[in-house]
Image 1 (spheres, one colour):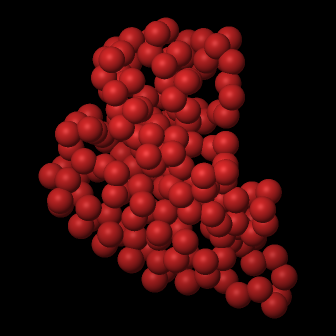
Image 2 (image 1 turned 90 degrees about the vertical axis):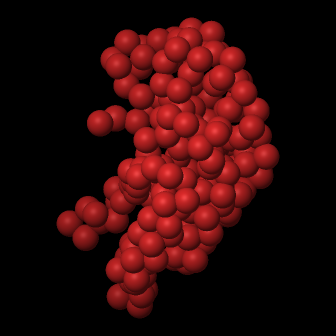
Length: 184
């Protein structure tokens, strides 16, 4: 029920979280190598940088090649090799583009980018894909609310078509967090 995501975690933090039986969402090649040495034969989720920059300001745009968050798309094969060397099963893939994204087209593009690197040969144990959050919440009366119903239909179709081509029905996750409680 918990996916632990941390940037620049220490080995001590890793040990504490692993002792709780929580699934790790690893966002760098170096951390994946370290994790593999400590926990050979375990499961992980990988946080991938979808190479899309979006968010309501520069400080919350967490995608793109200048971001410290996530394994770059061009390094995914390296991550797969590290996992294989350490008998690690990659059960999930995760991405997060930013926060307060008003352009759902950018969210959709990040989804396409992430799905574009997934194949059954590299990810035979995959169970889920987590597309993160970042849904824009209108804070002032002049802000327009995004059409998430249309976005949702388009996202579901994209994912269903992907799963059909992948040959396995996977779970699709989003992290709506702030969006679900902001109006409260």
